[in-house]
Image 1 (cartoon, rainbow, N blue to C red):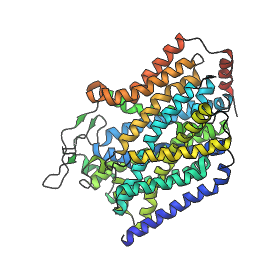
Image 2 (cartoon, rainbow, N blue to C red):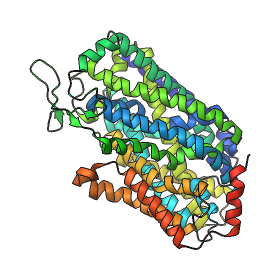
Image 3 (cartoon, rainbow, N blue to C red):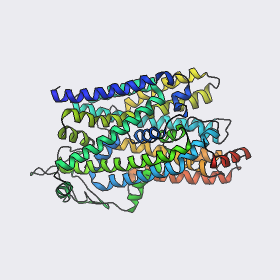
Image 4 (cartoon, rainbow, N blue to C red):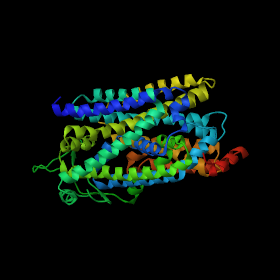
Length: 520
């Protein structure tokens, strides 16, 4: 490695050492009991809650996937996605956070999402718990794979080393400190990583504007690309075997702008619906010290989200003007953040900025692994298979499950040509369609029943697969993002089956009324 690469690598190693130190610091408290390991004993403060929720939610796709979409297709697709996510973030914090924090305590002091659903409907046979846990295992394995792809692309591009080797090394690091520190380490490090991600995005955006001679100069360089700066059109790179073609003058070739109609906009905005079913965010609501602190958390989270999303989209758009032919495949376009960082900054600063990608990856993958592990250990192992299991056994099973899930995620991530945004979009739709509707109905509709919950989860989760694999390839109206139809179908199933089944018991209805005003 060259001297510059060694300097960058050293800074990132220092960052990794700090994260490991956080894991070691919280190891003792994490090992006290499964509640501390899985939800931090419900003692997380408002700043950590907000930053940890957003950092674990956004993952590496914020610094690589979203800028890659903007670099490849232009403004519209990335911008409408960002708008949908910002609206979803605000509404989730506004309506769901306080009600869920209180209801999770009322419903048997639930410390996982499957626990909450099962306790909410007072089920004896843990059907809801099992279904929820299985969907979490499936989709979080896919989600963790997207994070491992991110770290693999980062290190292979930065150090010009084998992608698979770099991906595995990054994954092993994440596994190591998550197993040691649990939820407390994950939340504390996520706070720091949220700060690093924010700094990286804003710093790189400012540098891009300066290097490009100002926003006006940058815009003039790309405004001639058909559809690139439109909200109701989309750029169409001219491809041959998946590679964008370049003119003799050295300019990237684009065809006529593609249409970007209202159906596509609604489809893209529907990303915001996913927030209501995201376990990594919902669990942070459940872990905060007091419901009264969630107002401050909401303000912090929404401001962070708005600035970070806007910066990520702008970096991708500006990157096309500054490096028009540097990245000629859609998969390669997700490296625009890395390319700009290494070209704009001295090695030490580049290392700090690119630590933002590592931060995003770590902050998400540790959350995904933790929640997936808790879904199996608490909901299936302790809730169904071995109800008399000791707390120590549950803790051990959590760690073993985490390792198994990580191995499967690494296998999925072995493909170097994986597109981070595509992987994330599928897992996001899975959680949004499976858990989003029933989370809202369980919190705000007294008449929802256990049968309705089961029907909604199966219909929503199943529709994600059906739409993505069978209907979406047909194109036309079926080309919309699978989250939207899955969310709608799940809502319909919940309402119809709940109205056809016997209304909830007086005990369940009484708890529902308590949750409306419960403060803790």
